[in-house]
Image (tube, rainbow, N blue to C red; front, side, top):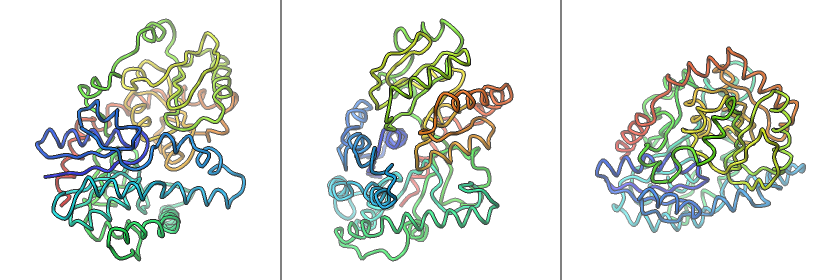
Length: 417
């Protein structure tokens, strides 16, 4: 079979899918991979011969559209910015993906993530290919995952409202892509159309966090578990293990609190580091602060160490807790490390991950903009209680193993015809 992956977004959106692409290739399938331009080098290190598709996700996340307009006090400005971000770069993504997938009959399955699945699905329809989506978070109406306070029936209505809002924001842009591909405009939401056509929507997160959802959705939305690269593939990225000097620092005292917000734009790095330093000093703890995609050129006290990107699998088990943005990939890494979380969330799925970790008894959450010395100290004090730390250690071995999750996802994609 020939699989064509069209992967928009940041590293957290792309890297889990690359693990599945590698597994499909190992099984003998022909795999063509398209990723955001700023992630081509990453995918190339894995030997996937990647192609650039769509917009540069780093440029988008550092743009005024994301950093300023989406946070504007003016609701009209915010709505306009969300609408623009929701369909950002779709024209270029469509053209690039058409170039990779070819004409009718040249690809068996088109695979996309949540970002850009509207375009990927339309292209698959146009060329007569199967379509599969990799979802790192629930995006269908359901009764099992709380997004607002209230009983199950309220949850389902709340999900319906959110999905309807997404459709209203993206309908014109999606139909413009469909027309450009020679298709008629859609009259119903994507979720309805995917279910009607029998598309596979792989749930790439652990069912332990969403009990009841696998039974509610059924076989068309198979649960694979959190996806991660195999150890040999992580070696190819040069990021496996602990960097020189960091290992000695980790071993030189009580395990630190890990602080990292991945690709999320930190508006004031100096303030964040100062608040982290103060809160951890109050608690007599050390802090390991990862800059992620940000630039943290600030001075730090002796009990704080500032680093760039780290190998979560190697570093997090040597920490006592993690403060992070609540992205699916980081959430999975912290869970697997067996340590509790303080989720400093920004938007999208992040606050719900924070709530799910709280429901599981392994974390708490605070809006990132409100993370100051007092709130961070209180949150860390809460998750460092023995009951929470013990619960986090109990949960870790219950998660689906990464290699099993990747195999399950590949199995599901092989059925997407």
